[in-house]
Length: 209
Image 1 (cartoon, rainbow, N blue to C red):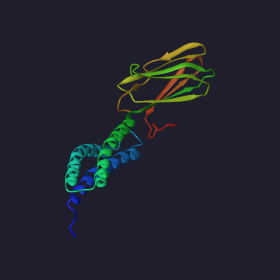
Image 2: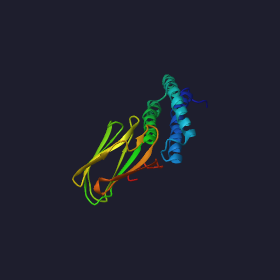
Image 3: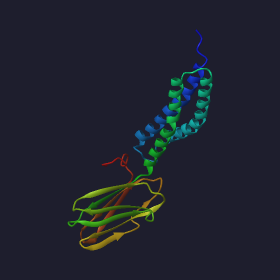
């Protein structure tokens, strides 16, 4: 018994939806697992993802055309709806994966109160104050972590009050848009402070790490 005339265009539409969805997912998850979200690794997966994005832009209208042809050949509404949803879901999925790659630029700043007094009015600034984070009060021994994506190259600065005196500094470390770093700022007695900078560790963008 020969296939219905709408079978072939339905298969084409299904492939146009599933191929970029599957390959794009493999590219993103492969990059994430092998690099832990670092921007200086997983080049093969990144290239695969870029190729999938470009290919998806070609396959989307091709799949839509196949659905139009299938509709003209009597395909059921359910068959057309399912494949239309598969095609459309590739668009938000691509956005999610592209945004996920932004984790490669996510900076991590940990502030530790290593003094014997509370730190008050603590504020952090970065990139010529284009981004800022108000922490407020840190009890002795307490720490907080700030994660952000730098909108441009710039430095880190902080302002606070410790033992009743204003404490602060700027130009502590330099953030680059595509280079993730982990920073540890310790505040000590008598208004002293130390800062350590290290390359971003895998998975350091994960909450509670």
